[in-house]
Length: 153
Image 1 (cartoon, rainbow, N blue to C red):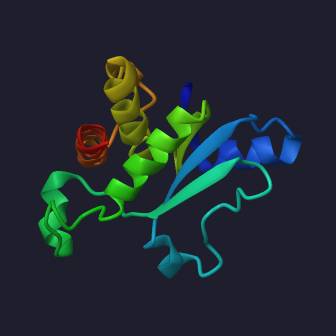
Image 2: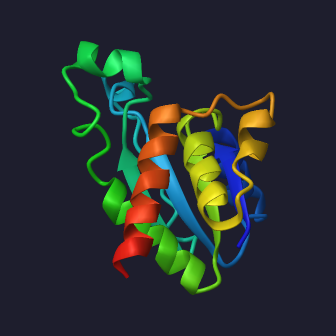
């Protein structure tokens, strides 16, 4: 299984120029706060391009900002267990996974790093990529959810 990280603009370009990869499951993070700035903003419509899509409307928050937004670690990212099941389904069905967020630097990078670490022990490659700033809360939540899912199957 290949795991890749993309920004919204990169994913849109692949859709437009017909280079969207086949046999790909997509995890698409989008920011709910942007809707207050741009009322037309919404998640990307992958249904004509990807084999399957998991959408996550999730603020890009680090651990220190959770309480400022009125959240706890446990309350942040409540769909992570469903995402772990989705990831395992993609893995078991031989699909690649594309992780996408607005800039392809934080949420998607944290998710991709967790997937790579869980399955292959290579998540550090994402952290070592100077173009990325993996969200560590997303990383830990996804990594823990994958481990829990594996333990319960």
